[in-house]
Image: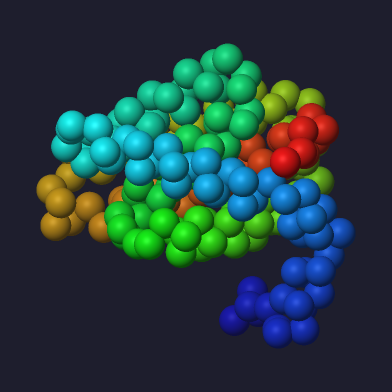
Length: 177
């Protein structure tokens, strides 16, 4: 139980300089909206929903290979929302994902080792999270739908962390909304 934060500790962290830096950048809602739009576009295409996840992953990989951090963040966010599996009102989905992005990017921005990795070699740092997401997506594709819930939850978490890392990489590169 020692790992749990008190309400005061959580409140202090939420207004800490790293979290404030992420929140005040304005990137989280922009990236969340872009990610949700990418997911909606992918779902509108004539294909099975499981194929949508694979296509989002492929596009994330292409964006990463090309060094397009905005797209990396958006595709990671879209994959996280796809893995969540919940279809909700578009505005509600954007708001929820934006809050999630602020919190996950805030965790990344609060860790000087992660910030240094993203500053020094964003491609390598983001590649590791992509690879973990790809591994989980492949395992999820092989799993029967009834038993894939835990894998989907893991994939959502890793992909969302990837979006948070990419958001911090964008801030370090000086890109703003």
